[in-house]
Length: 494
Image (cartoon, rainbow, N blue to C red; front, side, top):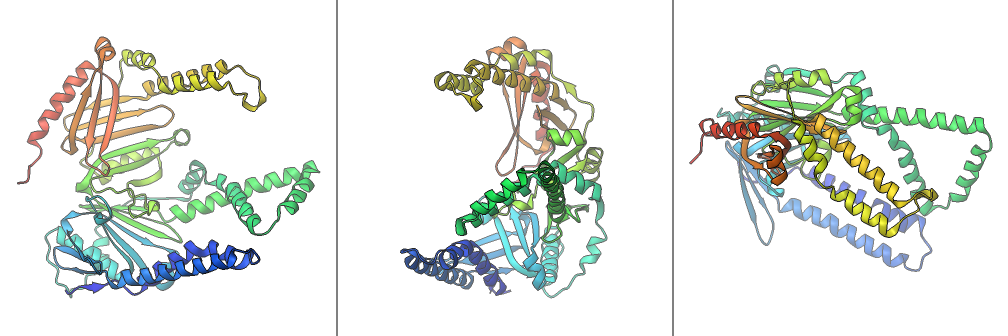
């Protein structure tokens, strides 16, 4: 295959992004502010910047080409100085597909391949593809990584491969309702309305009319109550709709090699990750999630880029942020049978609590020094500064006590499992062959109390460090001997 350019529609999508960026500036310059002395110069500068941005988009499309064969991507870009990249399919670890509402209107989608390489060179993105092209490209690369040769003109039916995928989880209406409550998305309506008001007020002075409306609402208690009830109902509905649009149609599939996740109503997002590249599993619970008995299962991947390319909405490491707690362990064992979650874990020794309480809190000391120096009068309560320092100290101690009681650990033949956290908790599980390095630390206090701090280091972007403070000395020694056996489980490539 010869080098070819990306779809011409890529230009339209990039120009649409440029227009969105300039929208409010042009609204201000050409519609709402016509009489200012400097407005003519502002319009000229804005128009020049817009034209240059569009020229740059077209120029970049003309000078960027790619080709694909049976083993790799080949990318070329630049005009005066040509940059060439070769990315083997074997380096591809995550695959993202994002179908925005605009893509849906024209029957297209976007596709992004993530590798373990850092920087912009670690991703290959096709902004506009037909769904058939995206299916074929995914299938081509998947087969190539399995050492199955596919001829360039061969057409494969994706349904044959979907039949091999097992459905593990489908979000129900109840799950979506819990998600809207846990994410607190219902609280976003009032700030959104406030931002809209101030934005409009910058162009059209509506502050006086708003003050009159507020005075009228507060003049009668029943009217105030009615408005409050309306805002509560509207916020709840807004939160549910927002959550449904983002997490509706959530599905988790898997086959022998990969995990597949899809979600979204208006903007559809799909993602796949190689099981072989999973370095660790996390089960996280915030305080609200612990109350509602739901959890989030995250996967730490060797090629994880946190969404990459500025698209944080992909949330590529998370299976589902609002899983019922009873389904979390089941999902891990079904999707990743090589990982074993232990429900029974060991508590830390009491000496670990004493060590936590004896360690100085720099946050408290710095805050106390600032309170002593400024002695602020918070909310005109006329409270002495030392009382705020005492309240902060109580909070620090309480969080440390909670962290001690929530911390757990277990070590078996192939796995280590650590649980930490105070109000929010994180359960971390990894295999011995996925741990690239360990650390063990003991200061004078820890030596005296017979405890230590251990750290596991896993490959990710950035490298993942997981700490556990206060394990007994016997566990530290067992942890070291456990890691020494890793050499018999890994194969070093020449």
